[in-house]
Image (cartoon, rainbow, N blue to C red; front, side):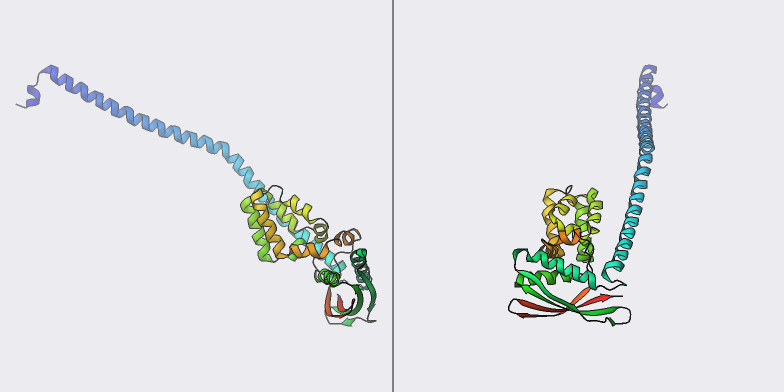
Length: 279
């Protein structure tokens, strides 16, 4: 006869009781695991339900911001194109504006008594080049080498209207990546800075840069400024120091598109021949 059944009734009862306890403990563990899993899923569902409207709002705001920036850039470029058609490559004669611009620059540089515009003449008839016209100009300046270099540098920025015009596309991308990496919320200010009128910047470059970099960590400001100065804004500062404010206030910038053909020096006199373009 099976040994199990030989055991007395009391022993068998103890064994069945122990097995029941073990099975109960196992069942409780399984139930607890299911309850914990259900609780986690419930909490996740509640969290998603709470965050989903907020995430939708963030996505909507980001989409609106991107669209607004696209529209802003498009409108800014359109406005600059219209400005270029009026001032840089004009339908009318560029001579009067060229005269006023050179007189203003010469006056600003001559405040120390070391520079002056002695003579300025233009050929009587413009030359038809097909899609554009040119008129030859002849100027004589009196002054130091440093001031003559300044006026040639200013003429070299002819056609530039915004800060971005003085920076290469690679530099602009590098600058925006630096801002995005260090202060993402300042990205819009950085983009606005690139579209800033060049004479507004040149009139007070420190203040314009400080305003744009006000929320950027101090540790990154020096590197960002160095990038901009080395890429072209350093030349803007040196060329327009003491000049920009007058050009901006009198509405003489942007200047007509010019191209210096020759410079000859005789003592402190500088004979400059240049071409002025129009449509």
